[in-house]
Image (tube, rainbow, N blue to C red; front, side, top):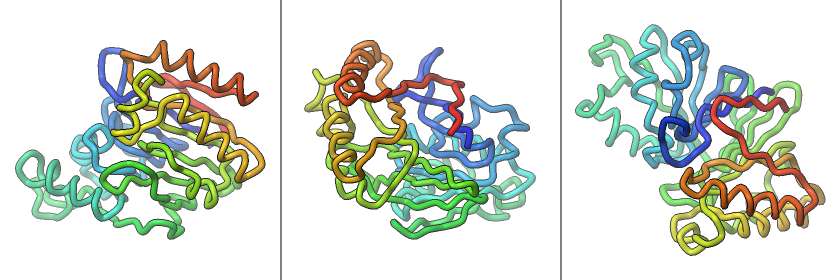
Length: 256
């Protein structure tokens, strides 16, 4: 399994992009930068898009992707709340075409909205996918993905603390987890449903207690303004736990 980080931050600039991951070139996790970081040919290979929740930085590129890939229909999957937000705020027939019916100016549906039920296993583009509720507004979910050869990752999407119920239900080899702000902004992280490094340490400690191991850990969704501080604190967490925690950047690929 090859994970490409198209966007790894919570804010956009010349050097940072909004969160979007691409699995083996065919399955997208969130769509913050799905169109801008891929060629048209690369976009055309994507078979499905999984949306963790309805915040703008995770759904933004869905309309651009739908416009760019008008020769076929791509599934876009999310909770009913996520799909309702996408339909009423972006592909609403005003800001962008609806893209979901042949009445679109493209004269065909270019995306198909598919509602996800938490904990229900689905086969999507050859992967076993399970949506798992996490601690974030707008019915946020994370995704456990298992490839045909048994490689398993869990992408939390945006999440706050209190993941003990999640750890009981997953057994990933790779954990891609939200660490947005430094410890100095722990109160803001808690209020917004995100993690800081100290919270990460607590969640990983609980994971190890519940599962008896720790997977490979990747920390994403960092605030670029606070990234040096977050990176320093994440390294301290890794040292205390005796593990390696990787912090990816845009365009980077990770092989599982």
